[in-house]
Each structure stands twice: as structure tokens, then as C-alpha cells.
Image 1: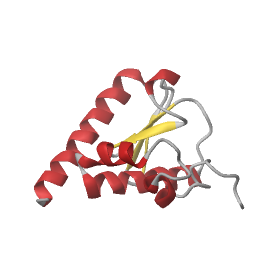
Image 2 (image 1 turned 135 degrees about the vertical axis):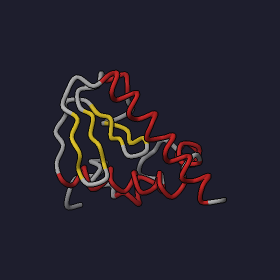
Image 3 (image 1 turned 180 degrees about the vertical axis):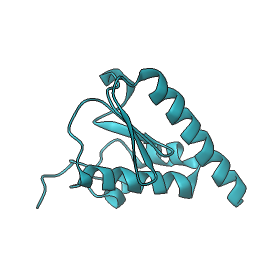
Image 4 (image 1 turned 45 degrees about the vertical axis):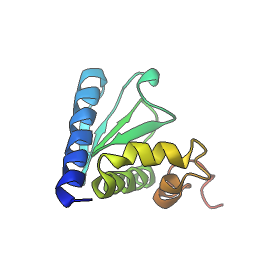
Length: 118
């Protein structure tokens, strides 16, 4: 795939994340490295504990620590690598985080899918 197609997909994901987060966020928007964190979204607006779309981490009011930010930063890099394909590939990898290659790569403990130190 051409690099410009991947970059366009990443930019599109970032735009969707900004619109979705900007419209629904009731909390502060903060930057952590390349990742923008949108807090206070309603629970129906994201799966599980949050979702990374492009460089936007959309989440509710739950606790966020450095390990979770590290996990979501891996998802941001995955978006940069796969662009438009990221949502399709993620869905094909399955909903079980313990078998989903994207969650495994991001770190199951850091993403709170496994107890820390297991």
C-alpha cells in the first residue's frame, strides 16, 4: 500500500477521533506525547474502557495511569502503520482481547485485560 494512503487513513482516523471526542467529551482534553486523551465521554460512546481512533483516546471517567497511556500509544502507532485498514484488521482479529493481536501487541496488562504482574 502506498504511504500516502496509509497517512490519509491515519489522518481520517484522527479527524473522526477529534469530532467524536470534541462533541461528546465532558472532561479535559490533554496531550500525552502523540496521544490526545478525551475524558468524560458517555459509556455508550466507546467499547470497553475506551477506544483509540487515530491519535485520540476516547474514554469515560475511569482512572488513567502511565501504563494505560503506554497501551493506548501503541494503538496510536498501529493506526499510523495501518491507516484505513486499522478498524477492519482490528475487527477481524476478534473481540477477545486475549486473542486479539493488536491488544496483545499493546500489552494486556497495561490495557487492564490481565492483572498486573501476572
